Length: 94
Image (tube, rainbow, N blue to C red; front, side, top):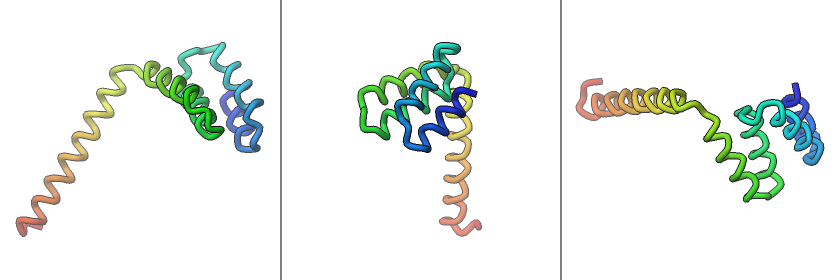
């Protein structure tokens, strides 16, 4: 709920109120991945790069390792499939 409130406030250009909502959400769950990323995005949009980077780093730390590995495997499968398709087309097989 606080994440949605923060997003709405950010969309209205109320950055400081949005940050308050995000901070409240992070007090409840300091590893709330979505809010960590949204906070980083908001800091980046108001050109506060150092804080944006801090929140992006926290977001990366909050991602379970299994999720990262699963995403990398999926990306590798997609890349392999695309390469096979490309090779098949270039060799006249498709």
